[in-house]
Image (cartoon, rainbow, N blue to C red):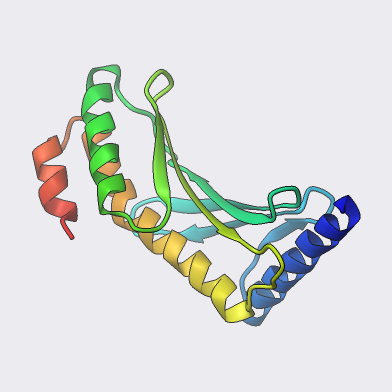
Length: 158
């Protein structure tokens, strides 16, 4: 079963790479680790993604770490902002490590017993990009005490 799972993950990685090639994207694929690194220029920050193809669980995992820290005095406000952002999301979520101040976006999709189309691969990437782009600058403003939680909630409402 492990060989079948590995082959399915490799097929999904190859399909995702083909979709990125067709779209003219530059990326780094690590076929041994079953992962892709890709970056984009955002409006406020560069958006870097690690896309992993988990052979055991048969899922694609998108991960993007926010490229800034949180002022110690703003930890609680950032936690509230992340909770509110997650409340609004129907796909994906933000993780917040209160101790380190790290904010990470995560999104997963199963490919068990299937192969996700190139169009769906690009849609998932586009969705992940849009979500991080919508929230990263506002998280930064809360993290640096330039925006209150109430202003954050008003800025990102539905």
